[in-house]
Amino acid sequence: MKFRHPEKVNNPINPIKKKPRWIRTKILDTQNYFKTKEIINKKNLHTVCQEANCPNISECWGKKHATFLIMGDTCTRACAFCDVKTGKPTFLDPLEPFKISKATSDLNLKHVVITSVDRDDLDDGGADHFSKVIKETRKSNPNTTIEVLTPDFLRKGDAFKKVVEAKPDVFNHNIETVPSLYRKVRPGSRYFASVNLLKSAKEIDKTIFTKSGIMLGLGETKEEVLQVMDDLLTAKVDFLTIGQYLQPSSKHHPLDRYVHPDEFQEFKELALSKGFLIVSSSPLTRSSYHADEDFSKMKKLREEQYQCQQLQ
Image (cartoon, rainbow, N blue to C red; front, side, top):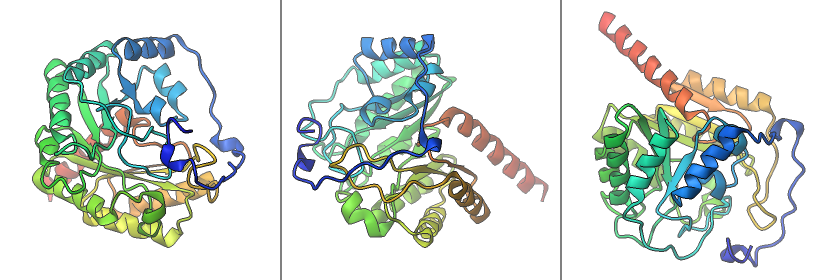
C-alpha cells in the first residue's frame, strides 16, 4: 500500500464487501495467456490489465488481447477508485512507440487499445507521445484499427488536438462517475472538462468514433446516471460503457453496493433509447472489454445510418 498509493495510507479502513456470484471470474491458464504475457514482458511494456487489476485479464489475454498502458506505470493523479500506482513518474521512453507497434504485430491484433497514466508533469500531458504511438502503430499495422483511452489533458490547452489529429479510429475518455461524486472519487479532474474534451474531439473530426464510460456502485443515483447520459449525448458521444466499481483495497473509496445485472440491462436499454449508437453495460464491462467486437458493431451501425440517410 505504501508503495503503490502513498496518498491513501492515512485513509480510514473501508472493509471490502464480499462479491456476489455474478461478479466472479475464472482463471484460465491457456497457452495464449502466457504467450501474451511473454510478449509484454519481453518488450518491458505496461498494460492497464495488470496495473488496474482488471477482473477480465484471464479472458482477454487468453484471446491475445491486451490494453497497452503508455508513459509509464505511475500516475500523477490520486483518484480514489483506481489501483494504478501513484507518485512521481519517470522519463518517457522514446522507443515506446516502436515497442507498442511491434507488440501489436506480434499479438496479431486487429483492434488495439492504447491508454495511459495521467502525466500532469508534462507540458502537453503526453499528447505528443500519444500521437507518436498512434502514428507508429498505424505505419507498421495498416490494417489494425486503433482506439485510444486518454486522460483529460486538464489545463493543457489545445494539446489534446495532437491526439485527435493523429487519427485514431476511436477517441475514448472515461467520465467515470456522476458530478456530485467528483470531489471524492476523482478530485484531480473536472466533470465538464471531461465532457468538453469529448465534444471537442468530435468537432475536430466528425468521422472519429467517440466513447466514454461510467462506473456504478460508488453512491450515484439513477437520476444522476441518466443526466450523465444526456450530457454525453450533447457532446455527440457514440459509445457508452457502464461497469461495476470494484474496490481495489480497504483504503480506496468504499463500495456503496453491487449492482444487479438486471439494472445494468435496464441502463443499457435506456441509453440506447436516448440515442447512443452502441452501449456495453454489465458488471464486468470495462472500457476495452470486447473492444474489437464492439468497434465492428459500431462501424456497421454507422454505415447503416449513412445508407438510410442517402435513401431519404
